[in-house]
Image (cartoon, rainbow, N blue to C red; front, side):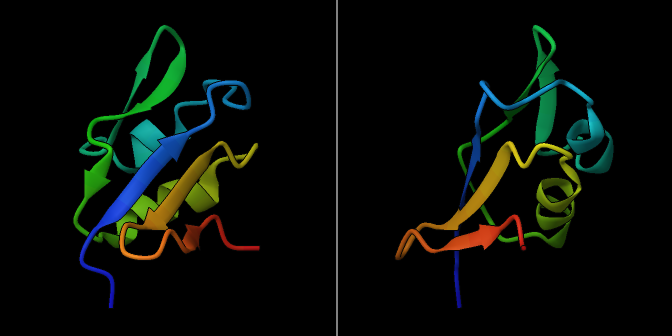
Length: 75
């Protein structure tokens, strides 16, 4: 079981819908109209998965810090 996740945002894909910031404001904010994680490495939290899975352009990735396995977005 993962003890830490790495959050990434592809700023070339992000279109600034702010769904992530609305879904998980403790983990994301918009900076200059683009999503930015408040921390790169975080404790696992289902709300982060919800935010990643809700991104319409799949700009948010969540990876296990142990093995770099992609956790979200889910296909």
